[in-house]
Length: 419
Image (tube, helix red, strand yellow):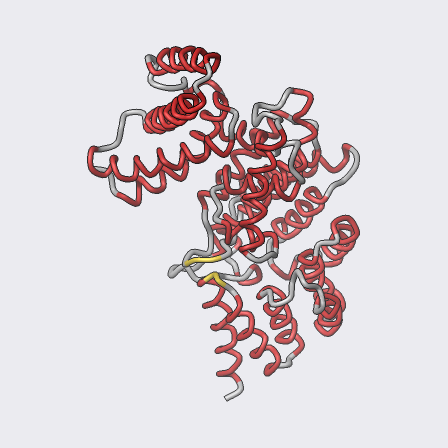
């Protein structure tokens, strides 16, 4: 009998692929999502009791198909329209033909990647498309998505709900994009993959620092997008960024799962193969033309990864790249990282002055990372009391337990030094 935790992990992995398969036939996102959720619940009950089916994906697709068929039959019976009854008979015949093959063949393509592009629907704003896709493809909770967007959870819940209704009201089918439409959706798709990777690399909440399932899936899907669009330099840049960042995964936590900062990591644990691939990708992308935000971030990551020791880091080059990136994105998190580089070049007090620009930014108001960076710079400046206060404030604001323990530990060490 399968272990419940193993079944839960498998269902999480299969959910977007099943949803993509159902949508290829039904084209109604809201109805398809409801049907897939019922199939997942049915599996969570049946599989621990009866054992795992030989083809779990096919089992889930079949249950979702039957749920939608029943819904369609009931709705059409109420309306009693002859043309819809005829269509229903035709549809059931099609479904029976599909059932004879025990669901969709596995070689019909990557349903998760298809769902990714489908979710970036033309009726949606980029922000709504990203939020919806993070739910349907990335499997993130509403709270995790809200944290990524720096908005309240209730606001994000409303955004996702409105996105579903917008698709339904638009009359534009939730279907496979035509070949000439794919490039138009790439920007939103890349943003989605970037956010999914970030949540996997540094989980916003919970007991684990990293969620390798999300990070690995983001890398896998980005590889697929790169395979489809090898000449898109931002696709190349994003894949490079993921590889160069993920290369440090093993060194980021200690034996008890505790967070280890970049400067304290054992660099011999970094994945040399991933670094080499990432450096090759960004070296290929940069000379090709217009440089985008993902390429700049990948270049920064490459500088960190190629430094054999923390003392060898070229902070002036990193600072220059962050300054270009800030003008390009106007993202407060970029300024936050830039402040660290600025401090490493010009001293911690200069970095603290740069942080003052973010104090009134509502997107970072109360965000633990602002307090954490401030604490780090106060520590470098020798202001022990201010550093302790900022570390404690950051610890009280994060929902990640490993980050909380790290910040509390930093404050405790500084406190013990003053006693």
